[in-house]
Amino acid sequence: MLTRWQSITLWKRVLIALALGVITGLSAHYGGFSDVITTWVKPFGDGFVRLIKMLIVPLVMTTLVVGVIAMGDPKRLGSLGAKTLGLYMGTTFFAVWIGLFFGTILKPGAGIDVSGSDPAIRDMLAARVSGDTPSISERILNIIPTNPIEAMASGDILAVIFFALIIGIGILAAGEKAKPLADVFAASEKVVMKITLFIMELAPFGVFALIAWVMADMGLGILSAMGKLAAAVYAACLIHIVLIYGGVMVRGILRLPIVRFFYGILDAQGVAFSTASSSATLPVTISCAQHNLGVDETVAGSVLPLGATINMDGTAIYLGIIAMFAAQALGIDLSFADYLIVALTATLTSIGVAGIPSASLFLAFTVLGTFGVTLEQYTLIIAFILPFDRLLDMMRTVTNVSGDIAVACTVAKWENQLDEDIFKAKSVV
Image (cartoon, rainbow, N blue to C red; front, side, top):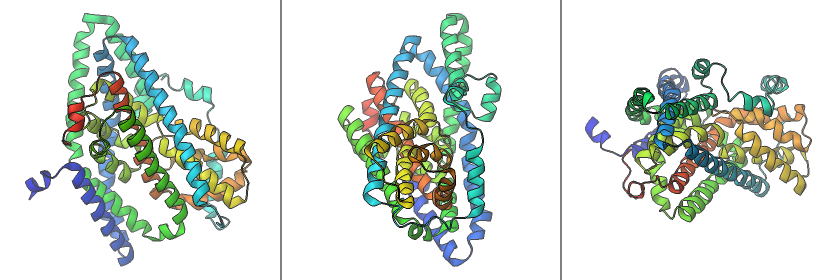
């Protein structure tokens, strides 16, 4: 039985687990035993998330150092970085406009009365927003860790990325004398990737547990309460994934089959949907890019960790839709200048969003404030959305992860480090 289960391609097992999780969760919700799911099933999902989070720092550290060493020339790092950042910023800007478009067409906030939102949630949001928010200069300076070990312990991915790049460049500069250290990192990277593959075999069980808990907790009532907003977010994200990633990047730029691309990333999308965390999905994302799509480890190890931190197209879409939701619910008419300011602000704001569930909601005030939304109005809006945000965040994360891999494939193609035979072949994970 176990052999037969393992003979099924992993992405198919993940989809089966998703479907079974939905059925089990809804049965528990409407059957009156949702507490059983929370007590006995959810911990398996939490354990799966903890396992993949355990790998994030060692994976980022080893793959980046090995990637820099493999380049052989630090100048290539600048070229690769410029291409990566350009693509991430470009897709994010398009994502905001897609969100604004769907928010305008579907009008998710029209006729919504947000005054009845939970007072406790409003108080919590007000406290979060009124606290000190780091400035742009502080965010940039925080990339440089004063204590690399502390940065690794706290999971500060941007700081870890910076430190790994410095280590890799130092090894290159030291030349032959640093070869033993380079060998240590190379061996460590192979070990971490093997562990990643082992943990991925648990993905169907983790996905089942997490989805069953979400549906047992919320049921289908969430769709009737937030139907238009959910429809706007899901439609905008799907269009962005298919049109920008599939049509423009994979088909237009890479001249490669779209269907193969989406088959290759299904495992990462399934884990992203269930965990709602780009950072937690990173080990699976790297594995899919390398083994299913032929992205060289040099590119995968540098582009994808950066993407999990700064590429938040799903968040950008969401911020655009939230802006329209708030304007419609509060009766605020937006001019074209307002749209433009919202697009620019949402693009920049999304870069600072942590790759964890619901993080974008706490930065939405930056965007809403551009057209006069007060703190009191913001707390009403977000407190109304927050109880339902998990379902929306799951789709946003799928978009983010899909974009990470699309950018990695594009950069790899430009750097002549994309194995198109692997890309076009049957997925192996």
